[in-house]
Amino acid sequence: MQKIILILFLLSTILSGAKAQDWDGQITILNEDLVNSSNMEFSPTQWGDFIVFVQARNRQKLFDKNIDTPFFDLVFCNNNNGTLSQVKTFDSAINTPYHEGPAHFTKDGNALYFTRVDYDGTAFNLDKNKTVTLKLFYSTYKNGKWSKPIKLPLNMPDVASCHPTLNPTGDLLVFASDRPGGYGKMDLYISTLENGSWSTPINLGPEINSEDNDWFPSINERGLLFYASDRTDKQLDIYLCKGEERNWHTPTRLPSPINTPYDDFGITTNRNATQGYLSSSRPGGVGQDDLYQFASSRSLYEFVDSTYNLIVLDIKDAEGVALSNAVVKVHTLDESELENFSNRIFNPKDDNFLLSRKSDSLGLAEINLDSGYKLITISAPLKEDWQQIVSAKWGGAHYSVTLKNIKEEAAAEPQIVYIEKEVSAPSINNVKVEVGAIIVFENIYYDYNSYNLTRGAKTELNKLVQLMQDNPTLKIQLSAHTDSRGDKKYNLELSYKRSASARDYLISQGIDQHRILSIGYGEEQPRNHCIDGVKCSEAEHIYNRRTEVKILEK
Image (cartoon, rainbow, N blue to C red):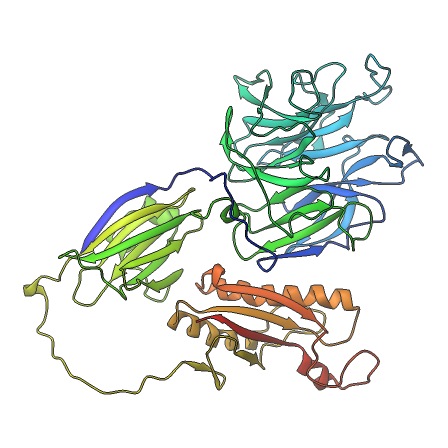
C-alpha cells in the first residue's frame, strides 16, 4: 500500500475575478426580530456564547441631532443555536450617555476594542472645529469587571478613528479613519502590535480604499477581511478580501442576498463563512438598520475563489491509463490522532467517512475540503490503495495518483462468476429516486413550537443517510412545513430551523454539506384543510408538520 505521510498545507490566494453567479438559492437570510427594535441595530460581533452589537436606545431622552436618532450603546444577547434573544445593556464601565460601538473582542474575550465619542466621562474633548469626533478605546476584563477604558495611541487629533477589528492572534488591528493622506472619505488603516506597542497606522491602499467610504471592517477566524463600502451605488455593500499587513488582494463584492440595493454592512461569520450575522436597512425589517442571520450551503469563500480548498485527483493505473470509477473517500482526523501517530490512522472505520465519490471516465475526481486534517483514500479493484493526509488551510491542489497493481504473490487467484442481474434505479419510501422526485418522510415529526428532532425522526433520516452514501453524486433539497397554528412569520422561521436541523443531522452522519439545500415553507403548503381559522384535531395538525426531500441532481 502506498502511504504518503507528508502533510501538505494547501495555500493559495483569493482570485480577484469572481464569477457572476446567483447565490440567492444558496443563502438563507432571516431577520432576528427577537432583538431588533424600531431604531437601529448593527455591527454584531462574537463574545464567547454571546453576540454583542450596537443599538440606538432611548436613554435619558438624549438624541443625536445630527442623525436624528438616540445615542448608541453596546448591548449583548443570547445566542441559542443561531437564534438571538434577550437583549441586555453591556457593562456600565463601557457605555456612557453618548455614542459607543462598534466593537471587537480578543479571541480569549478578555480585551475589548471599541468606538466611542471623545468623552472622558465628564466632558467632551472638542476638535479645532468645536465638534466631537469618534475615537478608539480599549478595556480589559478581569475578575468579572471591565476596566476603565483608555484611548488608544492610534488616535489623531481633529479626525475620526473608529470601527476596530483584530486578527485571530490579536497582533494586527484594522480600523477606519478620515485622517489626511487617505484615498477617500473614510479609509481603512492597519497597525501591528510590536513589542507591546501598536505601530504607526498604514493606509491599506487603493486596492481596498476608494474615493468614498470604506469602513465597518471585520476580520474572521481565518484572517479574512470583510468590510463595507459605498463605492458602487452610494449604498453600503459588503466586500471580502485576503491579505496580510501591506499586501492585500483586490476585494470582491459579496453576492445577493448578502448584499441588496440598500445598506448592508457590519458582518461577522464563522470560520468557514457558512453562517453568521450582518446588519442591513433592507425592506421588511423591524426598524431602520436590523440584524439578520445568514446561512449558506456553500462557503462565501467559494464566491471569490472557485478553487477554494478544491482538490483535483488525476487517477491512473501503472500503465498510465485513466481509471474510471475509482472510489475516493475522505475521513476527518483529530489532531490527537496525529500527535499519537500510528498505522491505525490509515485504517479508519469504513463507514466513518466525510464524503465518497468516484472518478469519471477521464480518471478525474474533485473534492472540496473544509478545515482540519483529512485522510484521502483511493481504491480500485486489484489495485493497491493510495492514501494521503492533507490539511486544508486555503486554496487548492492537484494530485497525479498512480494505483499500482496488487503484487501477484499477495493476490489470491480470482474466481470470476458472471451473473446476469437486472439493475433498477434506487428508491426510498416507495418513490423512485429521479431528478425532480419529491419524497415525503411521514415520520420526521417535530414537537409543537420546536425544531428539535425526535428520536424517531433520526431513525427515519437514517434511510436518507444510507441512500446518499450509496449514491455519492445525489444532491437534495430538504423542505420543512409547519401547521397553521401561530404567527405566519414565526412559522416560516421555525420551518427554516426545522429543515436546517434535519440538514445538520445528515452532515453529522458524514454527508457533504454541499449536497444538501434546506428551505422552509412555514404553513404555506398544508396537506389537508387545516388552514388559519379552521378547527382541527392534533393529529390533523401533525399531518402538516413534515419534511420533504426533492431530488436536485442524481
